[in-house]
Image 1: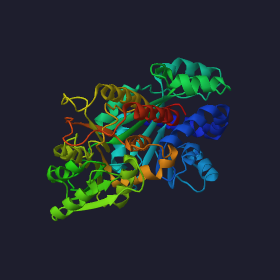
Image 2: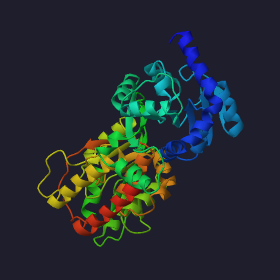
Image 3: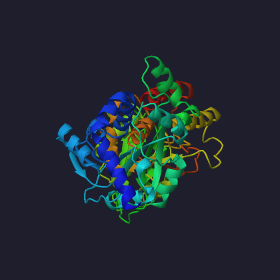
Image 4: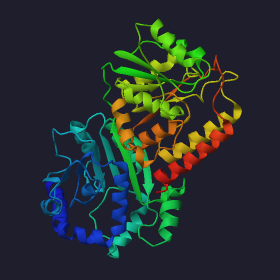
Length: 471
C-alpha cells in the first residue's frame, strides 16, 4: 500500500470515528447479533485481543478477564477508553502491531475487508499466538456485496472505502499459507433487521438450515495455529469405566502399550454383579510396577464414572478406554500421538471405516451411529463420523474448561460422550478422529439398549440443537 493510500484510509476512519456509534445505533440489531455470537464463541473471563476494535463495544461485550483493543484511529481509541476504562486500548496498525503477551482469543471483526495485505496480517499474528490461541473472524458473505452497496447509497449503513470481498475458501487458503487451520465456520443472519416473529422464523430457524445458511450475511470463522508440534512427553491417565467386565480387566492392563512420560490407570466400577471390583483389586496387586488406582463411582452411568475418575486423575492427558475392549488398547498410542503433536485438541475414536467383526456392532446400532455422526457434524460445525465411540482423549487443562462451562448444556448425559463432545465444540477445540478397528467383545454382553438409549440420544440431540445451532 502506498503511504497516500494508507493515509487516506486512516483519514477516512479518523473522520468517521465520532459518528461510528451513531451508525451502530441505526443498525443495532446487526451489532447485537455480532456481540451475541462472539459471546457464545468466547467464554467469559478469557484473555482477549481485538484488532480493529473501533470504539470498543464488541470487546466489552465478551466480558474478558483481560481485554486489549487495537485500532489505528486515534479518535476511536479515545472514545473506547472513555467508554470502557476497565479495558485496555492502544493506537496501532493491525498489521504492524506486536506484543509479548499471549491471548486465549483474538477477535478480527469486519477488519479483513479494509486490509491491504490479508496474508501479511495473518503472518503478523504468528508472533503472539500460543498453541491454544483461537482467532475468531467475522466477515461479510461476498454474495451480499450489491445489497450492502445499495444500503450505503440509501444511507441505511455507513459508507465504506473500497473493500476486499473474501470467500470462506479464500480465507481458508490464506490461513493455511500462514500455518493456521479453520476449526469451524458458522453462518448467521439471513435478514439483518429486527422484525418480531419474523426474526424467529428467518434468523433463528431458516438461517441455520443446511443450504439456506449459504445465503446468510455474516461468516464467523474460528481458526487456530497448527505448527506447534511439541516434542514434550506428557503423563497420561487412562480411565477404564467398568460394569460386569471381570473378564476384561487384566487385558486392559496387559494389552495397553507404554507411551508418554508416565501412565496412570484408573479402574472405576459401578454396580457389577460378576466380581469386577474384586478383580480390579487383584490386578492392582498383580502389577505393582503399574500405577493402578481402583475406585467405585458415586452414582450411575458411564458419564458419572468418567467424571468421578477425572476428578482424581493426575495425568496431563486424560484418556477413556471402554472396559469391553472393543476399541483395542493397542491403538491408544495413536490417540496420544495425535494430541501430543497438536494434530487435534480433542481426539475421538472412529469405528465406522474398517470392516467390523461379525458381532461387533448390531445393524441398528450402526445406522444410529451413522445418523448421529451426520447430525452432530451439522450441529458442531466439525466433521464427525462416529459420535458414540467411547474412546476420547484430551488435555486435562481443556477438560477443566469443559467442566467450568458444563452448566451451559446442563448435566443431562448419562453416557458422558456428548457432554465431552458438546463441551469441546463450545470451546472451539479442534476435533480429530482416529480410525480404529472395532472388535467383538471377548467377555460379557453389551449394556446398551438400542431403543431406550436411542430415544435418550435423540432427546439429547435436540437439546444440543437448541443450545448450539438454533439459539
